[in-house]
Length: 334
Ligand SMILES: Nc1nc2c(ncn2[C@@H]2O[C@H](COP(=O)(O)OP(=O)(O)OP(=O)(O)O)[C@@H](O)[C@H]2O)c(=O)[nH]1
Ligand SMILES: [Mg+2]
Image 1 (cartoon, helix red, strand yellow):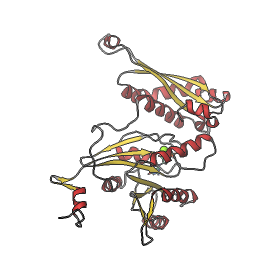
Image 2 (tube, rainbow, N blue to C red):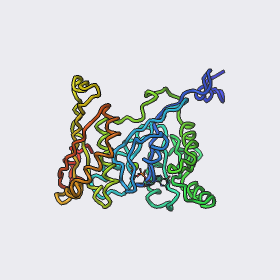
Image 3 (cartoon, rainbow, N blue to C red):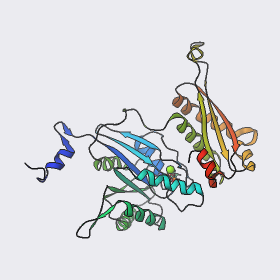
Image 4 (cartoon, helix red, strand yellow):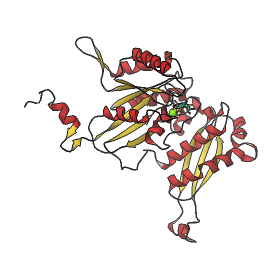
């Protein structure tokens, strides 16, 4: 049997003596702002790894969520929504998407069922074409890695509407596969997992079974705090927020044992930056009500991340016009 004999290579790639081989790799999850990327990743993994909100441009970093099944491990890379940037921050966010596309095994393009396909979607496809399309000798265009279209938010659509949507998406590009889903109701989530795993190359398990994210404690807590404020504040202000966890001070081993129940707490120092002085009181709220709400809401998840009881110390600060200032952006981690 030669290397080139039909079937030989593919058999070796997908099966071992003990059944199907383990598959693993990276999936970039891309799409316009607000199409449901972060919500879908949380639903696929079954736990909260990325913040999601009704406001566009919620995600600002390539958060890596880890989905582990019996036969595969996928690293789902959440990305900021691709959009026309209005600020330096916007440009940086688009750059983050470019970076996260550079070394992936598969791309999931999300298109929302409740909106028409628009110029934003076409721009994204054009960009992916320039980077990932390959024209073969006979002029046919193929993708260098699988490009899966995921039709999100299908709850609320009739069957006819969904079929028509799938047809339009099929005409948008020659996707490797198109799969509809509702992250809200869980409808077809299993199929999305199956499709994404099915197109992964063979590879080893990279993370322990119970690890759901690659974020470090400081990063996870900063995102949780920003997410809680996004939820609590109902105007344009959330866009002006940047959150940095400056330090986590763990109690000494001796302190934790005092009284037998671990009365000493870890101290988590958090800076919340706004763009202007006038925004500070809005973030803090009357009688500090927003700070109190956020601390209360995050008590349990922060304790879990830190690994013991923790006290969140929230400081609201001003970083003048940070979204357009290269120095400030760098300081804030962009
Ligand atoms: N009806 C419905 N709403 C959804 C679904 N998935 C997400 N949403 C809502 O869509 C909004 C945006 O969700 P996100 O997951 O934050 O979207 P995103 O694409 O990550 O947004 P950016 O990070 O800003 O690019 C939120 O209000 C979600 O609740 C779904 O399956 N059905
Ligand atoms: Mg997001």
